[in-house]
Structures are given as structure tokens and as C-alpha cells.
Length: 261
Image (cartoon, rainbow, N blue to C red; front, side, top):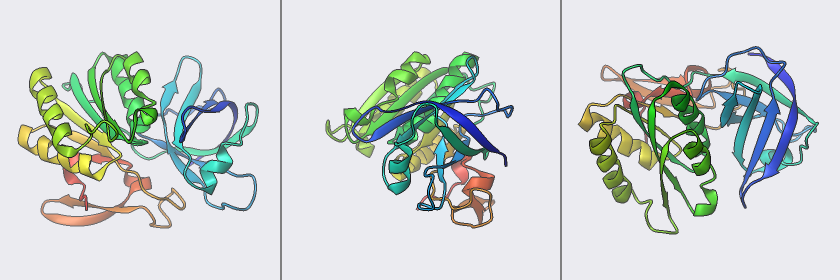
């Protein structure tokens, strides 16, 4: 794990609940993969003491920048909104294991809810780079929260938007949409993040259609290096369950192995 002190290029509010931050990574030599995350210090003071985990929204190799789309929820993220261009971002990472795009999976389906949309955006970006056809179902409370839709479209993804305010984000509606896309496009793999209900749906359809899949888990983290065991989840393998740390063994896992409560 390596600490990076990097310049902030921009940090702006993009909706009523979300902010977007862009960071200069010119001085960083590590390879960054979609699905990995950074542990970011949000405040210059003592409180809040713990860093916050942020999944990577965009990886811009051409201009040496990375971007984060984050939900302002608690004191840590509120403090982060006070960072201005020219300030220094204190990051640990990149951390964890990211998504894998199998060579044979040339048509993939992403389903994401809320801030999970940001996690899958970097995957759609990588799919676009590799010529992999990508379809995405983005779910949120309202259209105001579907911030990454245009970004995914810019990456070449076909985007379907479902929201609570329009009554289109219930599981039955999303299942019908997923089945139509899987059958019509001959989808080869499923990827999901951000919702237990969507995750269970993806597991069920992956088993039914015999599709490989991956899931990015979002958990509260203390240290992000595997020492505190605050982000433990369960995997089921060969009929037995074992506990793993999301920060160390994840945050991306095989879809069929994760036990979703």
C-alpha cells in the first residue's frame, strides 16, 4: 500500500447529493484497474479520524488523471467537498482486486444502483477501450442521481435508466429488462454493484443463463489493509462458507460465490 499526495484539479457539486473530483496522477506510477479503490483522507483535522474508501469513476491514461464521483453523506464526505483546485489529496492505493474482462466475453451487461454506478463506469470505460460491447441498466432514486449515464454513453455503452420516481426500478421491472437484453444481445457476462436486490437478481439470472459474473461490494472500512476486519463478507465455495475481507480479497468477487443477506 502506497500513500500519494496529489494535486486536485477540480472538485465540484454535480447534483443535489453528488460531487465530482478530478486528481492529477502524473507523479503516480502504479497501474490502476477498474473496480479498485483508494482510501482517501477527507479532513485536515483530527475528526473524522478514519479515511473513506472511494471507488474509481474514470481512469484517464492519456492525461494522467483519475476521477471520483462521490455521495455526500457524513462528516467525512462533507469535509471533502471543501477541497479546492490546487489543494492536495491524500490517497492510499490503488487497493484491492478489480474487474476482469474475459477475452471471450464480447457483450456484457452492467447493472448498478446509486453510487454503484460510479464503480461500474470505469469498467464501461475499459470495455470501450477493448472493443467490448456494453449495455448498462442504471437505477437510482431520481433522474437527478443518474449522473454517470452520459459518461457511460460516451464510452459507447447502451444505457437504460430506471428510477423510483418513475416507478421503473422495482425488481420485477428490472428483471424483465435484463431478460430482454440477455436474450436479444446474447450477453456473455454480468457485472453489478450497489444494491442487494439487484445483486440477488443477477445471481439468479447468471445461474439460469449459465453466465459468468462479478460483483463489486461496498462496505464500511476502517484501515483498508486487512487488519481491522471491519469489512468482512461471506463467500460460499464447495458448499462451505468462509469469511473474507472486502478491502484485501475484494472488492470485486465472483458473483456466484458471494453470500448476500
